[in-house]
Image 1 (cartoon, rainbow, N blue to C red):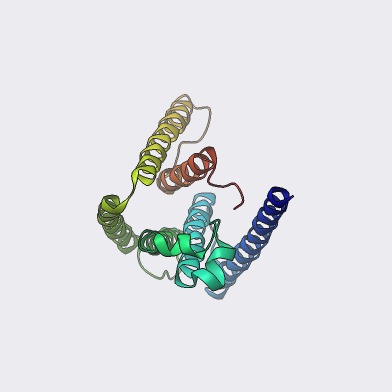
Image 2 (cartoon, rainbow, N blue to C red):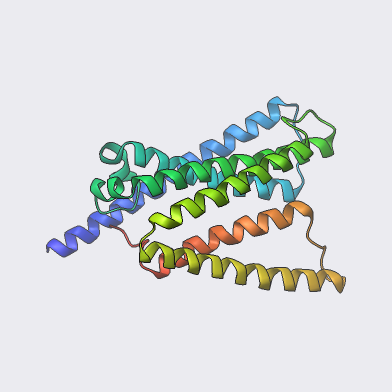
Length: 222
């Protein structure tokens, strides 16, 4: 009975997390659409919309983890898939760094999407496409340094997860880029645009994170 009650509570917790995530995601997208309309409306290309969505997912993930890390007992143990608040406290440094990295990376991706879309529409952008590129490049450099710093504090499980996620990301990129590029060369489909390559890279890493953590049983309700 105790085990069944625990499982039921875990699934209820996951359902609540899904509802909160859906509400936050929908609210964020409406807010971004309102911002676009406030700027006079941009005729966004599909590639810019996709990149904006990818960046938003990263930022939203970072926001959720960040809030949970700051308030582990009040919010974290309910919002995140952890056993209890003590687990968050033990991993606070790594989780906090990951949250900040995801938020900054997501913001940089969204900034690039907005800059390119605005430039194509002849509208005023927050920054120029060139500036957005250099910002993203600086963020990537900082992200790499933070990852190297975090690697030293990782235990064996997290190191193995990192290796597996990196390997799967590379395999997904290899397959998709080869098939898409070959099909485009044969004239069967349109070739990938610049923003498509950026979305593909970060989207593949996002997919790999979910697949590897699910395979490891880390997405089972706790």
